[in-house]
Length: 146
Image (cartoon, rainbow, N blue to C red):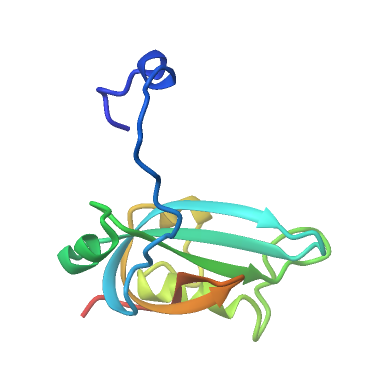
């Protein structure tokens, strides 16, 4: 957050300008992305999801979006056991496994926690999707840095 922001001044600020009403998504393509945040959540239907937020290190993406450090999100659906833990069975949690593999954290026998994702960097593929007339940029693939 900008340290020059003053909440009291803001509440008394007057403008004659209109605000932007459309988000400018990160262009489709491949980028180096650093994981800056993770957030587990569940849907109304009970599906478990891990939202992974990446900071994009790309001058062109920053210029196009008008954001100094553009962000994109990967929503990983999680397979959960009846006990509430990650299902480590064959064919389960493949998206999470691919992410962990890309950042060198998918080694059997080595302790791992989701918080270890923060700060890791991967090569990510960004694709666009449309929802209710708006275009969103999502992470559709991850790979190790070359």
